[in-house]
Image 1 (cartoon, rainbow, N blue to C red):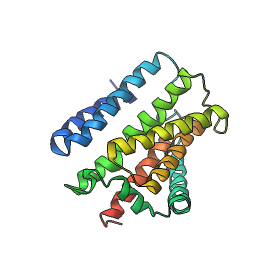
Image 2 (image 1 turned 180 degrees about the vertical axis):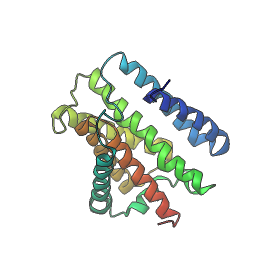
Image 3 (image 1 turned 60 degrees about the horizontal axis):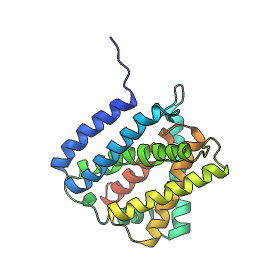
Length: 220
C-alpha cells in the first residue's frame, strides 16, 4: 500500500530531528526553533480548518523552475540589492546574522544542515507562509496579487516581524544587516504571494544560507 508523504509528516520528522539536535548541537538556539516549528505546525493545522493553506508545492508545478526562480532571486539579492542597500557581501551578511549564535562552531556538516536547510525550512513555512496567511485572514487582507495594497501591507508587516525575530533570537544589532534582513523578508513573502506556493521562497532561503555558510567555512 503506497502512502503519500504530506506536509504534516514533514513537521513530524522535523520535530524528531530538532529533539536530537537539542541534545547534540546547541540547546538554546534549537529550543527557539523547536517552538517556532510547533507554532508553525499548530498554525498549519488550525488554518486548514479555517481557510485554504498555500501549499509548499502545488501539484503539477516544476521543482526545476522553482530552483531557477530561486537562483535568479539569489543573484539579484546577493549581487545587486545587498551591495546597494548595505554595502555588505553575502558572506558578510550571513556572518553578521549568525554572529551571536553557535553557527560557526562545532561540527561543520551539522552546522551546514541546521543553518542551511532546517532553519530556512522552519522560517519560510512559519514566518513567510503561515504568519502572513493568518494576518490576511484576521484583517481581511487578500494576498493573491503581488502589487495590491493588502499584499504590500502583509509583506511589510511580516518582514518587520522577521527582522525583530533576528534581533531577539539571534542578537543581530548591525543596522545594515537588519535592513538587508528586512529586504530578504520582502522577497521571500513576495515569492510566495506571486507563485501561491512556498518552494520558490524555501529554495531561495536555503541557497542564501547554505552558500553563505559554505563561503564562511572556506568551502566555496
